[in-house]
Amino acid sequence: MAQSVGIKDVARVAGVSVGTVSNVINRPDTVASETRARVLSAIDRLGYVRSESARQLRAGRSRIMGLLVLDMGNPFFVDVARGAERAAREAGLGVMVCNSAQSAGEEADYLALFAEQRVRGVLLTPADATGRNIEAFRRHGIPFVLVDRVAEGTTECSVSVDDVAGGALAVRHLVDAGHRSIAYVSGPPGLNQVADRRTGALNALDEAGLGPECLRELPTERLDVAAGRDAGARLLGLADRPTAVFCANDLLALGVLQAMFAAGVGVPDDLAIVGYDDIEFAAAAAVPLTSVRQPAVTMGALASELLLEETGAGTSPVPHEHRRVVLQPELVVRRSSLPPR
Image 1 (cartoon, helix red, strand yellow):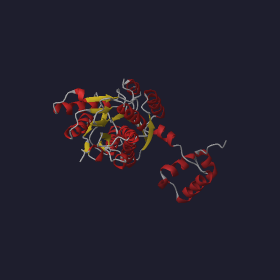
Image 2 (cartoon, one colour):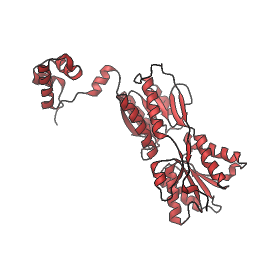
Image 3 (spheres, rainbow, N blue to C red):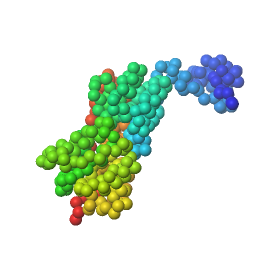
Image 4 (cartoon, rainbow, N blue to C red):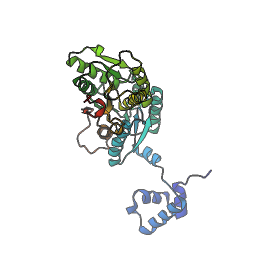
């Protein structure tokens, strides 16, 4: 196995001190041009790469922030990561992206990894409904910002979307189209987002003078297309099938749409469908999908900016204060929920 090349090796080949090599790397203007050229030649010949992790540990500040999301298979979280990475890069930092796969156990493992790596801070969409993972991570003293989740206390920042308002937008649209029996394909019940969207749906029914019995919940274990297909199969098996379905995210909605197509059920003529997130695939579906749009890229960028500000890497001259930023959703109407002509 080849041994790594260190700064001492470069100094030996160039015939200079270790301090001179360090100056060439970090403060090249302080070194005479001839000496600098000799050191750079040695670096090139040996293939030396400085240890960024060692430099960060000496400085006491990492240039890496962690991002832990629920599902990197969901384009919504890809967009969150894009926004976070863009803001971090502008500040000279990198982002380590990890996927909890909606597992509290995997979330705990990644949070432990972030602590071991001494990352500058963490952007986190929690998978553990109990909050135990967050409490354990707090002990490390590493700043973090909650993403797509409202912070309940005053000890951290959060950036989220008003999911109660989003659920109300979806179901109000269906009620206005004449639907009085609506299914909610909800995902794992422990997720705050799922519960908030259900609350919004019930609020919209109440506004219309309709009772909670008009909303029939079909929970799923995951928030993916396969779970949506399974929910669609269950929906098809109901004797009193609802005329519309609101799904907790677009992947579930796309799965329901697939199940309807396979069974020959017309969308929207026989069943109207509304999703949530407005991922790119929503508009490109066989029947373009009505969806509640979340500003995912903006959410990621704002979360990064809050973390950068808290850790001293931001540009704001104002001292950091923990804030809860709540963005507003928007309903994007497409053919999947339009009333029959």
